[in-house]
Image 1 (tube, rainbow, N blue to C red):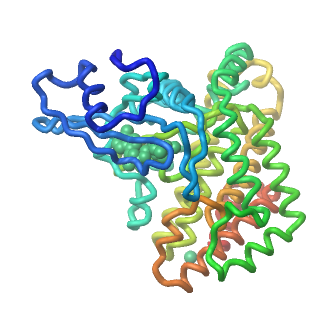
Image 2: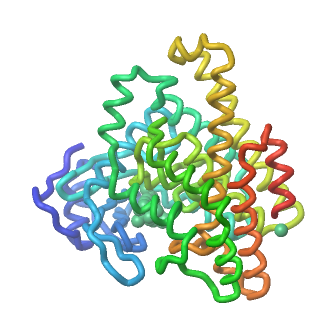
Length: 395
Ligand code: ADP
Ligand code: MG
Ligand code: MG
Ligand code: MG
């Protein structure tokens, strides 16, 4: 499909978004279209366009040339819209059915036209409402295995891998992650944001030199280890779900980084849920954590055997070595995510929306503690069952 769009950038109004949708061969020319902006508007517009008669719709996501952070606007590259659209297309070809279909793109307008997933629920919202999604772990484990294996040196010719790594160079978005996940939360930095009762716990993190030493290693891994094309922002707000389906959205942070990063971010967001739940409900989430890793490991290993590059495949023990590294990295990155979601700039509703103050502060202290423990002990875990036991103790 082709878009008839102006050749220079302009932030769209709802009327202009409708006109853009009309230029695609999707809606009948007689259709009455409605438009609603449903994004949070901090970085991007998300317009939902629907045909009033049929209810059918599509999504137009447009990048804004700035990011609104702590009330200020910072310039931010529009190229991230192209990164996002290309990552969606590539990931969609590698992990069938796991991302929305991209109908059209326009680089100058920083626009991606894609499948409307409004019939699904954002995973974070569903989890906060106490729901459980029986297919989630299988779908995300499989998404991770396929997207990460097939973009890595284990599954790609080195020329193609380096071509992709150059295509998905994403320095401005990476810098946001570097600062907000790996730097600011570990120092008394003014982007940090936490409730006063947590000051002592935050100070303990800033004073914990062995912890900061491990975080520096993880940060350098994030900066330098171009292992596979990552989603780059795989938290539970980037996943749509229902009982049967799972779709991953919003890969504007995609770049070549360490394989464990996507896995760690996803698991950390489930660990937050484990901490806020109890009893049977907590048990289900812990099982999802275990199953996600198991599905990832099994399918990644399967792809290694069926589609892997010979030199790695035929080197005894290398697969086990590679998977162990991914596992330990993932645990470390999960720890960083737990800490930054508690005292850093970008919080999660799972914790912030706990109404009772003393419960909320307790849960946040637990999250910080879990983060510290996972970062510092990540190399001690020999199996997912051991990690499962630790998560139960920490939550
Ligand atoms: P941002 O990069 O600004 O976080 P997202 O891609 O995460 O933007 O989208 C923000 C919100 O817009 C999502 O939480 C969801 O509610 C809605 N949204 C985004 N993509 C779609 C889609 N394909 N279908 C339906 N709703 C969507
Ligand atoms: Mg998002
Ligand atoms: Mg985003
Ligand atoms: Mg608990």
